[in-house]
Length: 116
Image (cartoon, rainbow, N blue to C red; front, side, top):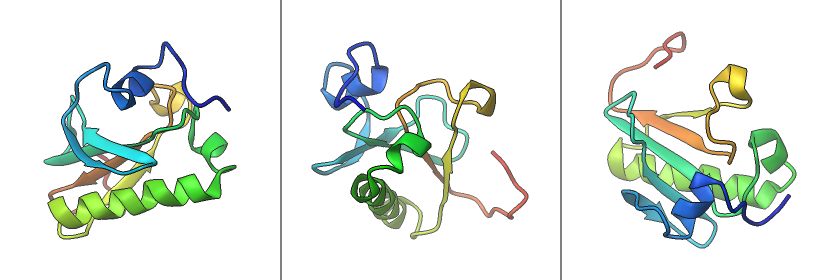
């Protein structure tokens, strides 16, 4: 694990080098609106440290917990605390930026079988 990756767009967003619409930030996590939203609330929760995917991040349980806590705070403010939290791991699973990020999705009623 490295702290940052110079060619990573999310590391650049965390560093303030690329603008984003931030909705939450603390010492460990930044959350910003997705550029191509799939729901009326679609926010990405990104740890400030660079990990490629959720499996790598699971080695740092405190940081993983911080990401989940941040998602809860965003959902509380923007979606009455109700949300879906989705991680894509690997290209064939839809991951296009290889800096772990959780998709906070909310804004309409969902059933367990729904996917955005």
